[in-house]
Structure formats: structure tokens, C-alpha cells
Image (cartoon, rainbow, N blue to C red; front, side, top):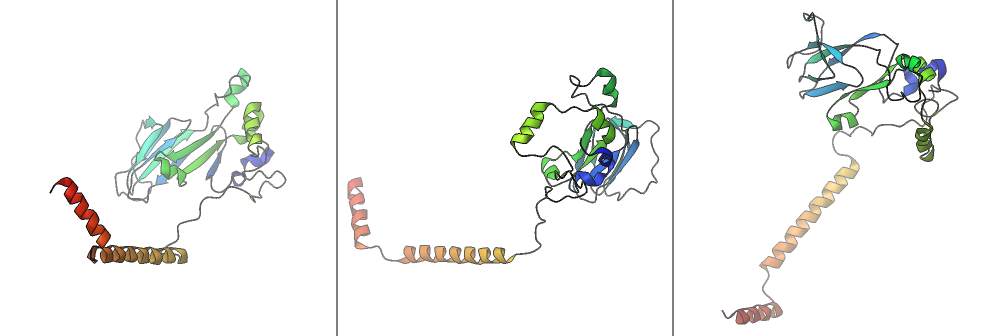
Length: 236
């Protein structure tokens, strides 16, 4: 909203958002190759896309040799089969209707939005299986009005509302301070993991040894007297 002509540069939106900047009216095809043995239901916000191709399982990557349907079915969510591929087509023309009350009616057709394309399995989204579709960002800056109470919420939480994805306003390509994803899980055991495993095993063996020693030991005089008292009380 404050980046001017740089709004069309995908780099200012951060690496981890997987951004794609579109011009108003662009006809876009998304080719998604699923190199995974699991199914993934992919959803595109803000559009009813054409399903140009959906391969069978284990079909591999898309190579462009399929016979395309004359009238592709329209969906907003489609399942990507295991080790298969899908091809979606849509037009970047969806106006933003969320701010009807603050945008003049003659500008509504120009007010485009930012949409997410993501797997509909929640933890896959959290892991980053998503992309950000930014439609006509330069026009968005001219037409979109963010309500003051929204900005106030960000201000109270020290969340920047100007600049790039890192909140930098001087150099919009400087991503210093931007949010970063969790580090990848290490392969194999780390030093801390090995130490934790060793002490866990030692604790387990000591526990088993203590239980065995206690169970194999003779009953003490106090325990024997207590047992006899309980038997007498029970009338056995």
C-alpha cells in the first residue's frame, strides 16, 4: 500500500510468502506437480478457476501432452492426486468487495485484492504449502482504503503497516527483520538429542533395577506386622 511502483516487484513481499504479482486481466495458468505420495486438496481464494488438467495417480510431472477439455469444469478447490499434476486457469479480474462502504462504486471494479493459493490441509499450510497471488498492486494502492481501526490494532501490537514485508521503508529490497520460518529439522541425532537419549535410557534402567531390587527383597518386620494386622482385621 505504500511501496509505489515497487509494488509490482515480488521481492518486496518476502521470500516465505511465495509471492506472484499479476497484472489486472492477466489470464494465468498454475501448473502444480505433486511429487508426494499423499493427496493435496488445493484451494484458490477469490476465483472460480477452470480445471484444465487433473492427472491420475502416479502420472508424474505435467509434460503438456494431455488433450484439453473444450469446456473445463470450474472449481475453487481440487484434489492433486499422489505423484500427479494439475493445471488450473483463471483470470485476474476479481474486485474486492470487502470495502464497499469506503470505496466509491465507480472504483469497485478496479479494487483488486491479494489471494492465497494453498493446500486445504491445515498443517500443510502452516508448513508453507501455499502461495500469495497479488493482483494489480499498483491499482490496489489507488483504490483500497484500510479502516483506521484496523491500522490501530497493528499499531498497538507494534506491527508495521508501511514498507516491505519486513517493515523497511527506505530500501524496499532490504528484508532485514522479516519473519522467518522455523529451521528445517536436522537429519539424524544432534548432540543434545544423543545426551537426552543416553540419560533417558540410564533413568529407565535405574528405575527397572530399583523395582527389581525392591520386589526381590525380604519383607521387613514393620511391613510383616502391618500385613498381619490387615489379615486379622479382615477375619481371614
